[in-house]
Image 1 (tube, rainbow, N blue to C red):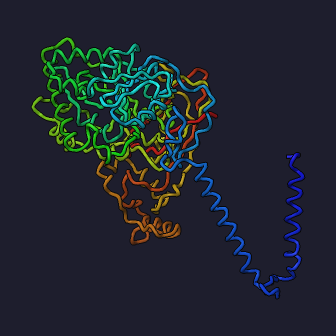
Image 2 (cartoon, rainbow, N blue to C red; image 1 turned 90 degrees about the horizontal axis):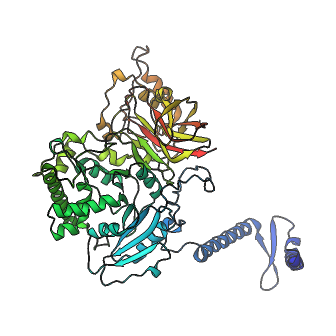
Image 3 (tube, rainbow, N blue to C red; image 1 turned 60 degrees about the horizontal axis):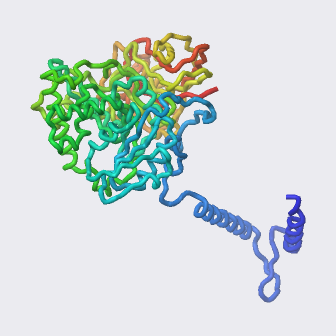
Length: 604
């Protein structure tokens, strides 16, 4: 800066010399200019000044556009394209600030180099490279094995900027069974499966839960498919010890290498024909005879579904074919279990699907939401029969319990880091129901938790706080919290806080919870009235025609509606001994469901 000071001084003198005559002619709000003849012309200063401001604004706008063109992201890139490799999903614009913990050693490293990633490749080279860049930094992967099913495309390791990559160019299209053959060849005890048209962001959290329960296949999916694979695509029959559900593997899944080798043996004892063997994904999860441990969250598809006509499961014909072979898999598993084939597991392992509580990964991949609340009834009430196909099973289950409520308000909405999405349980809260977080590793720091919810006031007053280490043995600790009402500024409706409180805090004896309330999306309140009108209406609600006080009348509202008001509670956990799990346990039955907009944490 000092070396160039003489240049700055010269520029300053030049500007002063050129502008001094202009300002010296200003003797009033009227400014003098000269026309082409040299004769003075008077111009109103009130016109010139806005013109100058407009010129400066356009100059700044053009400068911003040019900067974005040359230095901004490419036109074809999305927010996710600008994400650093291996660091999870990009933050949505409304993502809550959890504090900067990037420099802290708070990511688990358990299970390092114990997994081989198996990627099936068809012809999506750009997507495949993006997936490899995403997977390579994760320490759990010892190798990344790419099985190329596209015969007329030859892949090599040097095409990928990752030393972990191993490529196998298949002599022909082996379909889904290729992933199991690749896993059998792996040197690691665990295998991770993924197709080349999906990007899975929550690897570390899913792996942390898998290491706790490696006896179960772990799969990753969205709420729509979760409702299928945990409700409508399950096969239970106690007479033959059948306790299984179908689950996809291509959107991210973890399994032991031993279970894959066992599946290859099962293929021989069940007389699978070559085409059935090729469609191995339709059989693997069912043949395990254990309900997969499924996590529900957001999935990012890397291709345009409308343009990707080559995908195996696209279109009505692809879906019908999948269900046909899912049905065949259930029939073969039934037959093998009925004859007590030793290659098929007879005993249901623990924790059973009713005992599990890990639901969804947090948006930053640093925790897991836990809850004992199940969105569907006990699927064991339906007895599997081999003559009932998948389409008919779907109809039977849907008629008994429509999963649409859960699909709209799934578990993941409580930990997606956004305040305008919510998890809403399909049943009212019962005593002992809980929600909480698995921090993935034992924490020895002071953690502040934040709970944003829309439930009655008494819930937090009656709840108790429990923590546990990696052994998941819980102990109760004192719960000291601070709460306040928060207004959702994006809410367009008009309901006063008092009306909401009166509705939520009604006595349980006078209320019957009905899940059909989710369809009541309108109520008899004028959304355009101001606060004074609302207060007057509240007073009128409390008086009868004789002017005497009467029981408060509550407008017809639904527990599933967004009133625009939430309760925010914060509490701190700092244990002398390390803890990994935190949960808030309900102290009594309530009339309303869980309605949780955010459950998060930060280091303080």
